[in-house]
Image 1: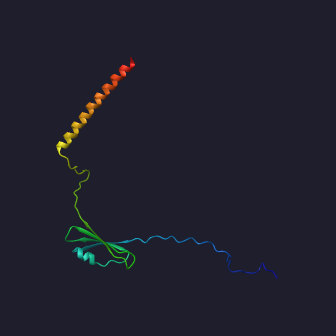
Image 2: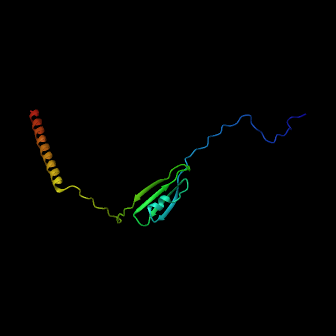
Image 3: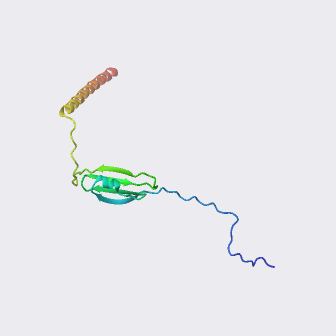
Length: 136
């Protein structure tokens, strides 16, 4: 009897290869889009599904709201309110810097700088005279 001719449909090893742990990634909140609303109260009452964040544009006030729901039904919604501010911007130009100090402050700083320069000049003259006295 020849055992070499015995057919085995598939080979199952006696040991199992260790399995890699599945990568556990945090689920991400999805963007639910932009919804125009007539008031903040409508935005607060707007139903948002779990795992979504919806942005609302108030049609009657300069505000934008976001309402975000967590992944659990037990999570409370997070409601945020943002005020819209229009900024004028032209291409290639920067906005002027406001001068928040008055001229007396600037004049005071200039006079202090001049006094420091005078003191340094006097100190250098003394140092140079001391050097000349040591060379003798």
